[in-house]
Image 1 (cartoon, helix red, strand yellow):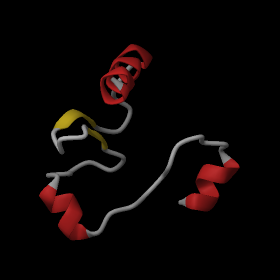
Image 2 (cartoon, one colour):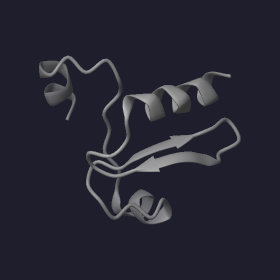
Image 3 (tube, one colour):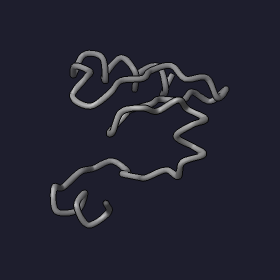
Image 4 (cartoon, one colour):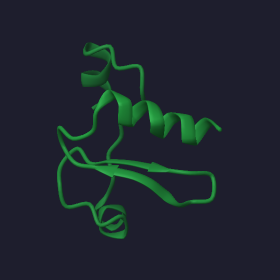
Length: 65
């Protein structure tokens, strides 16, 4: 995954999770995006190909505020 992210020039962290983490976060779709705030609350969840630029800007504004 790290090599793929480097080849694609992704500026964000790309990671993988084990089965326990996937179950804990109820991930059922590959490439699920989850944003967790400082209090540990999931504030955003979207599956593969979901989420607009506007939504992502809003999520990052919430996380940085």
